[in-house]
Each structure stands twice: as C-alpha cells, then as structure tokens.
Length: 82
Image (tube, rainbow, N blue to C red; front, side):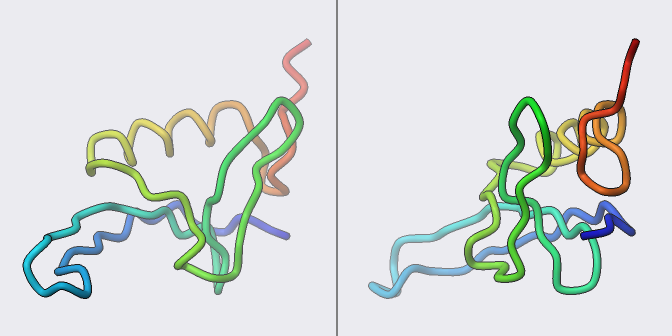
C-alpha cells in the first residue's frame, strides 16, 4: 500500500426508501484505495469505497486528513516521532 493522495469525496442521495437522505464523506488515499480507520500502528484501508469510513462532514474529513498526514507516513505506518 502506498498513499499517493488525500482526497475527500462527498456522497449524498437517498436510502432505498427514496425518502431518507444520506450525506457523508470518504477519503481517497490512492488509486482504488480508501481510508477505513487508524490504530496506534497503521492506517487501515479498503479497496471498496462502500467499506470506507463514513465521515460526517467536509470539515471533519479535512481535519482527519491533516492528522493522518502528520502522524502516518506514505506507507500508512506511524511516523517515528522520537
């Protein structure tokens, strides 16, 4: 896995009932690579955008991108801060 970008992508529409709206963001990390979650060692990713973390709004997505860039390297591993 190699992180080559941090692009927030917006999704909105209606659930299957046709009345209940949805609106969330995901983060694209590279070609067919999406942010799923992070832990104390690495960033977890998925190749299926449907399984990517659903982020409440653009502001939170941008803040999360800043956090990931600061604390994780391009391989999704925690940066050595010592």
